[in-house]
Length: 616
Image 1 (cartoon, rainbow, N blue to C red):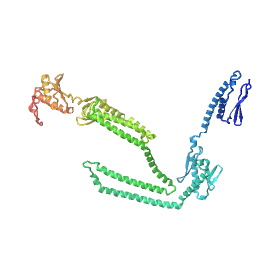
Image 2 (tube, rainbow, N blue to C red):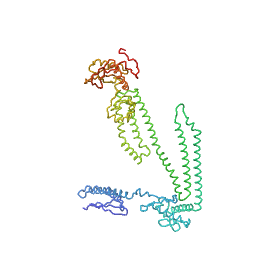
Image 3 (cartoon, rainbow, N blue to C red):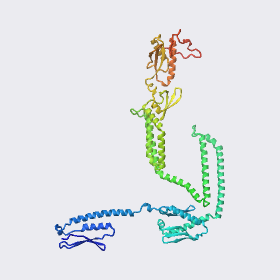
Image 4 (cartoon, helix red, strand yellow):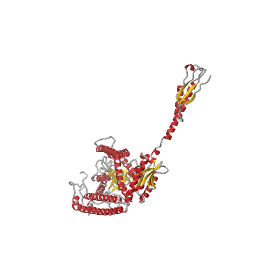
C-alpha cells in the first residue's frame, strides 16, 4: 500500500497539499496561502494550515494496519513550533536592525554668523562636524563680503541634481542638500532661496557699517557720548557731595538726639552710618547704570565691537534671568522649607515651655532633677534641628549639584578634624550635669583650684577664685580630675572646718578642749548645732596635736570664718595663760610665751566690741 505523501506546489499565490488515494479512496487536498519569498511568518502560517486541516475519512481511522495518521499530525505540530520560534527571533532581529537610534535621528546644528548676527544653522556628519562646516561658511562669507568689487546683484542660487549652490558671482558660499531641507521641513530650492536672502541682507549691512563716512560719523557720536558720560559722572559726584554736606548740617544733630522714651533704639552713630551707606549705594548704582549705557552705545557704533555690545547686554541680563528662573523654580521648595521652619520653631517653643515648667517645679517627674531640665531641652533642640536639616536637605536649592555636595563634604571633613576637642568637651559637659558633681554657686576644688562655680557651659566651666579671679576649665579636664564639692552637703548637714594647734604636755587636755570649744563659741557664723568637737590627733615629741572641728553652712565664707576662729583661739589661750607650742619647740622658756591682756590692743590696734561672756 502506498504511503501518504504531502507535496507543496506553488499555484499562483496558493499552495496545495495533496494526499494520494488510499485503497480506492479519492485524493483530497487543502488549499493554503502560498508562502511569500523570504517570509518566515508565511511559512509558519502555511504549516499551521497543514497541521490543523489535514484530516482523514473515518473509515481510514479503522485501517491501522494500512496507515497510521497520528505520527503525521504530531510531526506537523512539532514542525509548526520550530518554525514559530524561528519566526519570533527573526522578527526581533529585523526590528533591532531597522529601528533608528536616537543619536542618528538628532543631528547637531551649528549657527553661521556674520558680525555677531546669526544667519542660519547648518548640520554636519561625523566626518565633517557642523561646527567645522559653519566655520568654513563664515570664513568664505567674510572674505566675499569684504570684497566690494562683487556686487550684491551677483548673489544667486545655482541648482544641481543633488544640491543647490548659493554663489557670489562665480564663488560659492554655501551648498544646500536635501538633508538640510529635511530639518527645516521645506524643499531644498526654497531653503536655498531663504539662505540667499539672509546672506544678501547681512552682506549689505556688513559693507554699510564699514563705510568710511559711516565710521567717521560714528566716531563723532562716540566722542560726544564720552563727553556726555564724563559730564554726567562729574554732576553725579558733585550732587552727592553737596547732599552729604546738607545731611550733616541739617540732620546729623537730630539723629544723634534720636530717642524713644528713655531707651535708645539704635546708637546715633549706627543710624548715621546707615544713612551714609545708603547714599553711597545709590551713587554707585547710578554710576554703574550710566557706565553700562555708555559702553553699550559706544561699542555698538563700530562693527568690530558690535558683537561685544550685544554680549555685554546678555552678560548682564543672563545672570539676572538665571537667578530669577532659579527663584521661581525654587518657590515650591522654599514654601516647604518655610512651613518646616514654622513647625520646628513652634515645636521647640512647646518643648521649652515644658522644660521650664519642670525647672520651676510646676511639673514633677520622678527621678528627674529640675537642674537637668534646660540641658535636656538643649539636647532635644539639637536633635530636632538635626532632624529638620535631614528633612530639608533635598529641598535646598542646589542641593543636587556637585558643587553643593563637594562643599558639604569639605565642611564635614573640616568639622571632623577640628572639632574633636570640642565634641569631647561637649560630651563631658553633659556628663557633669547629669552626674550632679556640682552646680552654679557651689564652692568646689578641682585639682588644686578652689573657687565658686559661676557658669556651667557646654564646653567649659567658669570658677571665681577666693582672690576674685576668673578661672576657665575645659569640661574634659574636669571629667578626668578629682572634684571636691564643699557646698553639696553643707546645706543639709553643714561643712566641717578644722584647724590644728600644738599644746605642751603640762597643760591638761581637758582644759585645752574647753578653750578650743570656747573659741569656736565666740566665732560668729559657725553652727552651734551640731556642736563643735575636738580630736587629739597625735602625741608628738614636744607637744600634743589638737584638732578643732566646727560646722558651717556657708562654704563661701570659709576663709573669713577660719580667720575669725584663729583670732579667738589666740585670745582664749592668752586669757588662760596657755602657750601654743606650734610650729616648733626647742625648750621651756623662763616665762610662758603668751600676750598679756593689757597688751592685746597695743598700738596701732584699736579696741573692738566686747567679747560675749560664756554665759551670754
